[in-house]
Every structure is written in C-alpha cells, then in structure tokens.
Image 1 (cartoon, rainbow, N blue to C red):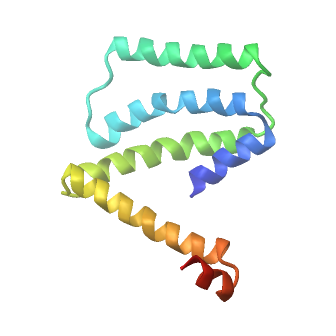
Image 2 (cartoon, helix red, strand yellow):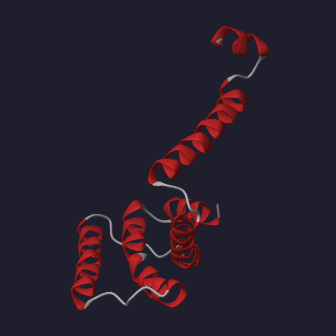
Length: 135
C-alpha cells in the first residue's frame, strides 16, 4: 500500500516521465537486496550493463519529452526504498509458500475476485434498488 501511494504521489506532484525514470531504477537496489537477503548470486556484468542501458534509455526518453521533475523527491525516495523491499518479500513468499504454479494463479484470482465483488458492491451499487437490478 505504501509503495502504491508513493508511486501515485510521484505522478501527482511531478510527471509520468519522472515516474518512468524512477521505476527503471528499481531493479538496481533489487539486485543488491536479493543478494543480501535471499542469498542469490550477484548479477553478472552483462546484467549490470543491461540495467544501465535500461536506466539510460529511460533518462533519454524523459529528456526528449518533458524532462525529469524532482518536486516529489521525498515520495521518490520512499518508492525507491519500498518497491525493492516489496519485490524481494513477494519473491521470498512465493518461493517458500509451497503452492504449485496453478495454485498461485488460483489463489491470486480468488483474492482479486473477492476484492472485485466488495468494490462493486460498495462503489458501484449505491442502493438496494441498483443491487436488485444488477442481479
């Protein structure tokens, strides 16, 4: 939730190009965090070259458009701290939960369906009359 809020705040207070550049930075701290927290091997030099090319491409894209706006630097910092933590935590949970690939898919779809039903019931159906008409 914190990561989504920080990402939305970056887009709100700066621009989409800034978010693209910021998002392209995320794999770099993820690589370090996976090595430290999960014991993964450090990425090979070819991977670092690819990560740098990704970052340079995003910066070039942003420079060609509206540029990078740093008005929301505190939100960017929060996003750049939380997003790698989220990614590595999710990777750890998926690797240790013990579900098969299909089990993970079904579990995620079940959670999304339940949340979808709650959202429709609370946001779209604003009266009992609308709920009866929908059924």
